[in-house]
Amino acid sequence: MKINLVNPPSPFLLDERVFPPLGILQVAAVLEEAGHTVQVTDVSGHADYLGEMAKSADKGWDVYGITATTPQFPAAVGLLDAIRTHDPGKRVVLGGPHATVQPPW
Image (cartoon, rainbow, N blue to C red):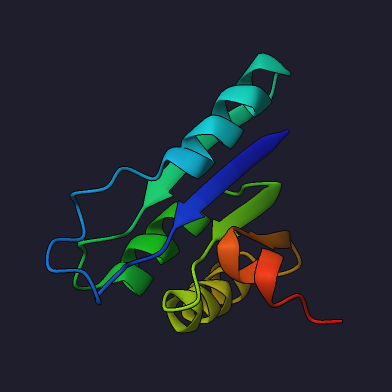
């Protein structure tokens, strides 16, 4: 399976590129060990993060995973919209602290 894990921007930080996305990198490592093809798309620090997501979505992934803290959640929704526009019908999973603390049920 081809899986794209996405780290959204963190505009609330003074420097978005200071903290590597360790959570999704750990998930990527486990998925690769299980035999999946994984790409981590880190759009933090990109002024046009939706355009960066569109470029990545055009590669035809089977599944997308987006991590998000609560302040990143609006950007994560924008990334979801970009994925739906450029690669419709694909499964998108939201994970990370926001999804853990604020589940939709």
